[in-house]
Image 1 (cartoon, rainbow, N blue to C red):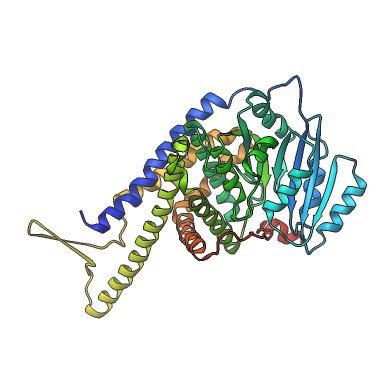
Image 2: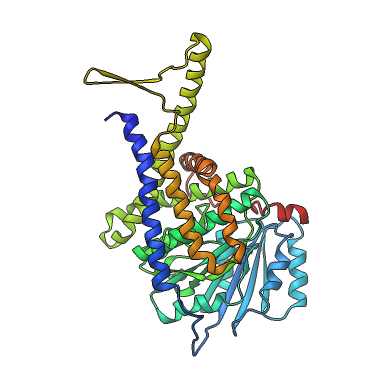
Length: 435
């Protein structure tokens, strides 16, 4: 078998196998663990909600006020303003003066990074349990009740990750990400939870046991995705992590290609940084349940490189074919020649093969499965967004693959042990109109 054939089959078989795995795992989780109403407890422990913020003047007031009357008896809100240069500090000071004791505001100077902002909030918190949310995150009124049930009933649970939903759905990119969040966030986390370990909690919405964070060393500032890193730190200290799809939140997603690209590069870079940072799990047999998660992500990065390599080849071969047709006035210009048993075969890698259609069909079935599972958390028009996911394999695979390639390059060139500062991400056209 030729080298290009091996790469081609890997590019085809890996996502096909993972699609089947995720569909089966998602359905099993949904049937076994997603039934029933919000559980009741005799005692509701005090919760501290921590919001790190940097230059969030457009969204911060709406988010803070939405937390005033949650369906939970005892909680506080701590907003950590990390070196904002806009009017975020003034807005927060005004809100703190107007609201009661349930809201506290902390100002940091200069910008020190999201991880440090979270750690400051944790150290100043009063609660036994913590909920961290992004500054653009609107949470469901029952979110704390769904989270606290896992933390109270099982002392081994160190964190519970929620179910973020896309809030801005007017643009093409926003509509595609409705399906992507349902699939990537929902279906994959359900499957990983069935298998026992999660790659990451959702940084936009996650609940923690404070003692577990202190035991694991809090958040580190040397990675661009502190949520992936803390997930691995907790699991390496043998804390269990749950996924609760009924803990809902609505977030703003990028609606420009530039914003989407920067977000995906950051995600990819953070994942590779965690692989690099936690490579020594292979030396500890006690961490064996993390080995499949590590291998799955590593294989995914390898797939991105192979896919990008084939895309480049397809482009080169396509240009070569066009040149042949132009100069030699021929309708066929073989770019690859294979000789086997005295039979010469000509084919052009740019032309799609039958497995391209199979892979596209598998992708659409995977999205359909995730939509059917998550439709209970959405309005009746939710299934109408399924029409837009047809663009996902056509464009998003290329963007995600190239972002993974760029993420690895960033990790290789970046100096280690540097505290990562942050910038407020692209919040979509919604915020551009308001600002």
